[in-house]
Image 1 (cartoon, helix red, strand yellow):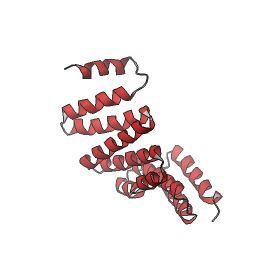
Image 2 (cartoon, rainbow, N blue to C red):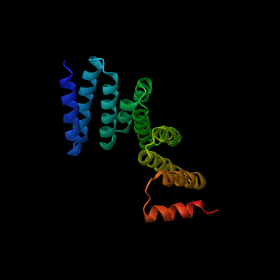
Image 3 (cartoon, helix red, strand yellow):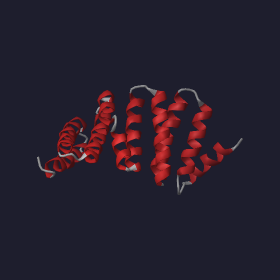
Image 4 (cartoon, rainbow, N blue to C red):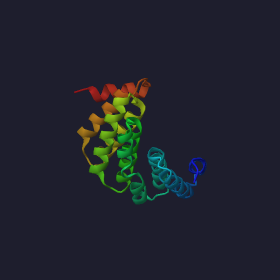
Length: 173
């Protein structure tokens, strides 16, 4: 199998995903990841598995989404790609959240946020912190949720009026 074949499959998976055909996209991503793996292109295989995980999650198959993303963070860590490692952890956290594994999800979202902070990606850091805060709020952990939300708002580089107001409210003691 040439490098082009899995790359073409990955592109087809992205097209299917954009069309809302999540199960088909997941299947195509799986074939692409297998091709990248056979070609010993571990980071491309891991990236494609993460795309598959997102498609499976959108298709309502959280258990398969978790299996698809599991371990991809370690591939990116080994390759020194901290941003993709953080994204993979966020995908794993989202699958855990969908499965109702709140403790695991929050811990993974927090780890993902730390890594996004290391690479200076404040937008994605804010996104994963908001996800963790929402879980805490659902579980009645209002203080923890508020602290995470405040951190999420602090991560926004150019806050809009609503974000500035929320930031102000959350900072009051």
